[in-house]
Image (cartoon, rainbow, N blue to C red; front, top):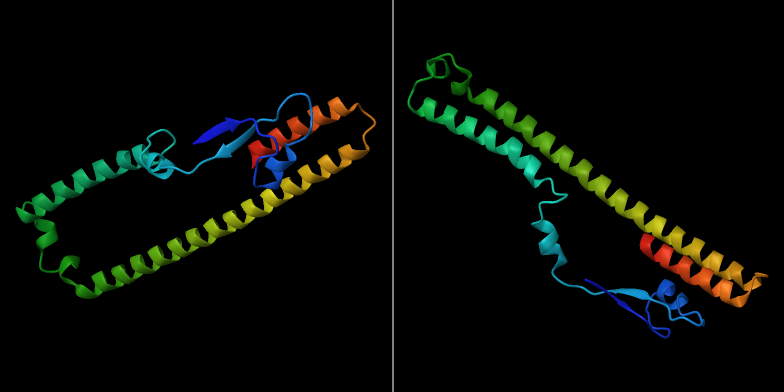
Length: 164
């Protein structure tokens, strides 16, 4: 949850404290509070992959249940032949090893990509912070009026806060 406040130099991070520029109008800073946002986000349908995955999983599970039913009723004779691959344990072992390897490899790749993305995100946020502080520092030597400079700084801080 977020709430907008109009502080006189209230804020813990540098962008929020930089918004405390003296001007005729008060600065508005977004303060984020922690709540149960994760649970709401985990069970939301809008923007979720859950509806698409259910469209794939439900028909597959129905087909699997039907095939299993027909196998149990012995209505599919080709699967129960004496020379069937279902009776060869080495084929199942090889298949299981292959699937296990693929699952571990794909999970490892996904985990690695996730942490690469997190690292890049933090580096990008640091670059945004550096750019914002440099622009605020350059305003010190501006030849514009103090009111225009303060207005520019407040808009700049708000826009960079949206990127944060």
